[in-house]
Length: 371
Ligand SMILES: Nc1ncnc2c1ncn2[C@@H]1O[C@H](COP(=O)(O)OP(=O)(O)OP(=O)(O)O)[C@@H](O)[C@H]1O
Ligand SMILES: [Mg+2]
Image (cartoon, rainbow, N blue to C red; front, side, top):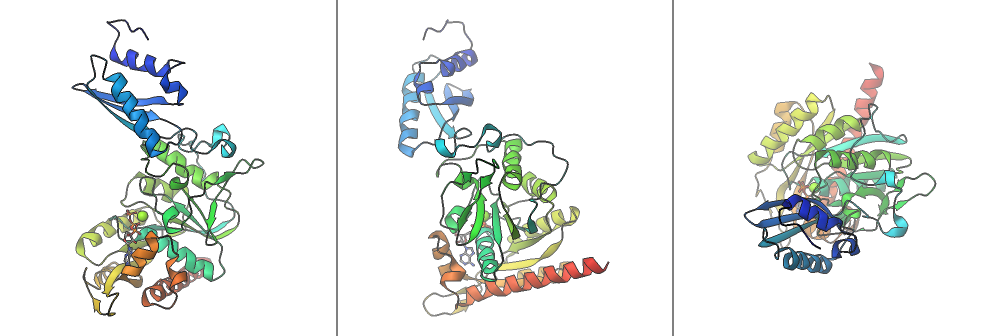
């Protein structure tokens, strides 16, 4: 390609990316954005799903080719997968593309046949929300209830690993709706099913919201007793918008007993209170440590912190889950913890919490109906 000497770098790189016969078009790549600083070029390239080897190959090609330009010494490439995240025969019609900008929908995006939508939140990351969500779903399923999960953590989706299922959801050609994946009897949708593993999602706020809206209204959830939303940590846009748009029935806050987690849990509680979302209760996770060898119990992160907090705030404590190595091991291996180990203390604690939650929901419904 001949590039005039006085052409701006922006024109030059965009022209190169749009050249029909180049390496770029052969590999179905397009330039999403770029940054150049002191001859270091950071490329954000939109691509179909690529294996890590293929990504390496393409990155190397960019490094070799583009460093021959005067303006560039070093090239780093990040891949996004806004296009073709589903394989050819599973490709949704254009208006179902995941990650598009949200429409300004005024009415709530609540799926029609879902009875209860419950959000699981924490404030602080890594306290066990996703683990709680999958085990809560399994417990509800054991009780004969129909359950779905929306994994709303777009940057760190956990549900495909926890439910041991990475099968891409299918598109129903008639309804044009996405059929959720099903694992251990639980219907679920996650961005982790739609983009290749090891690939970062680099979406801006509006695109994240667009994808989440699609999880609510373009997924064929069918009749469900419970749709559980596994929220990302924090109290940002995703939490706020989802809580409002999904018209959720209530929330559960997970925290570990130590102060740092409780400070963030308080923020999540305040957020739901401000949004007028019912908080059904708090759960203390990693409450006591149970030694996998001798069964000895130790309070590594303290104990009772969440109970005290719940009392102070006038909220119910739904229960406590011990810190148990088996939970971590089974979760990482996609083994449904409460089903595989029904008789151990940690499983029983999940079961008790779900009973307590069902009882709180029932009581709340009754008081609502009599008002
Ligand atoms: N009670 C427990 N005992 C032992 N390990 C646990 C327990 N609860 C969760 N874990 C482990 O802690 C880690 C974090 O859990 P999880 O991913 O569920 O947290 P999270 O709050 O969803 O995190 P994030 O904020 O990143 O979404 C996982 O490895 C999980 O297996
Ligand atoms: Mg999580």
